[in-house]
Image 1 (tube, one colour):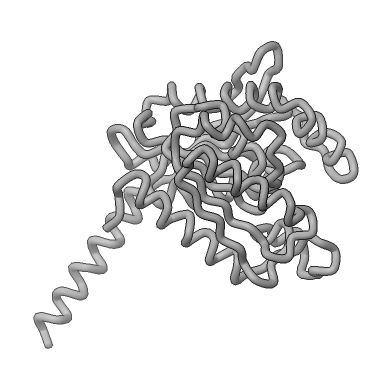
Image 2 (cartoon, one colour):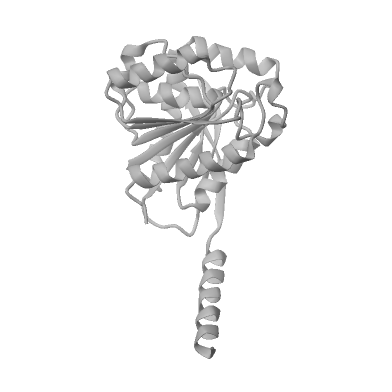
Amino acid sequence: MKTNRALLFISSLLLSTSLLHAEIQETVVEYKSGDTLCEGLHVVDSAKTGKLPSILIIHQWTGLSDNEKMRARMLAELGYNVFAADIYGKGIRPQPPAAGKEAGKYKTDRKLYRERMLSALEVLNKDAHTDVSKVAAIGYCFGGTGVIELARTGALIKGIVSFHGGLDSPNPADGKNIKGKVLILHGADDPFVPAKDIAAFEQEMKDAKVDYKLVSYPGAVHSFTQKAAGNDNSKGAAYNEAADKASWEEMKAFFGRIFNTQG
């Protein structure tokens, strides 16, 4: 009994020491994309040393928000080096209905959208903590559409994760440029992603021989990871706790595979 108590005490002490040493450090980063000044957020556990697997986050339609910042902290707590991008530009954080108009600029101008994401990826790749051989990107809604588009540029990333993003394929031939793996986390009842888009996307992936996985969560609609969306599925966008938790675990397992960090 004494031995067990001693082991429990030592384990608790080690855990406490680990928590004391861990400090999530957040730094606002200004950078340029063409002539546009952008303002992203870098998040890392300052207790970590050496090069780390790194994650780029692309935000939802309202711009870089508390949701992406929260996810950045969660990823940093898992040991990742994280940069949350700013696609719109410093100070541009529109709310509905203006958010739809702003997001629409990039959905119709994929070249501009790609340029903004590649600029953010360059910031992450130049960070001292980044292991450039272990970089991935995740995105939510507007950003979920974006990370697929980022992959289509041929960017040297190990994989992308799209949370309730659009799946339209404006240039299906670009699928052949994808270098990494693709994980799509989709609300099975999302009214904003028609079946024809899903079919066209899957065909694009198959034609390009991309290693992809599409997971559909029953009962989930658009924005299922965002508590601010409320719980009314009839609006087409709503939070779904089960899908939120399951999709996060799916993402974690995906990173374990692509970065070879599974325990």
